[in-house]
Amino acid sequence: MDSITIRMVEPDDLTACHTIEARSFPAPEAAWTTSLRNRIELYPEGYLVAELDNRIVGQINSGSTHKDDISDEDFKQLIGHDPDGGNIVIFSLSVLPEYRSRGIASKLLNDFVNHARDMGKSNVMLLCKDDLVGYYTRRGFHDAGISASRHGGASWHVMTMAL
Image 1 (tube, rainbow, N blue to C red):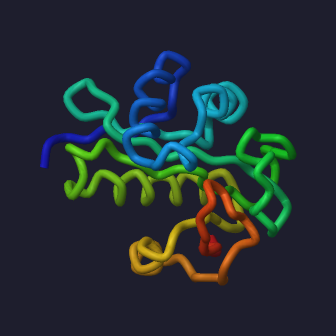
Image 2: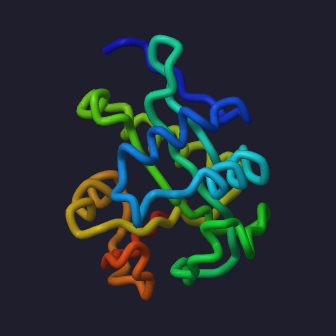
Image 3: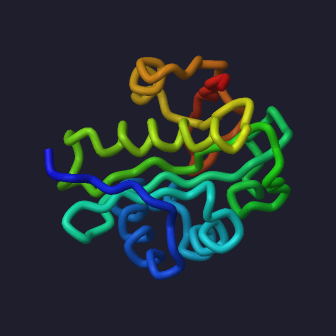
């Protein structure tokens, strides 16, 4: 596999990150540019990108909280975000379609989990649809059931990993 670099996001990465988001999720589920900008500016330590051949091809971004209920839509705008929170919540793990099936998402997730552990977090949490429960379970997450979130009109599973 080509050499993939995982690094912390920088402000100039916003356009590339938005492109990945828009190409990876249905419009009602994709984060707006303003949300991504907030995440980059307010919590860059919770936002990693994958670079291949000097191009950003993947991203993982998050917020942090003490709360166990991660269904609050405002939290995706980092309202209620607490950088010292014990739970780090992944909002998006996405890779450009033409770069999928190369292990980039798994590398992003592994590096993110290790980074969260280094930051002293207690849990990594996320919401995912039915078709991704197996993916996250194979990577050490536990399915904690259906979330109250109806983001984008979809049904979501709460996935947790104790660190």
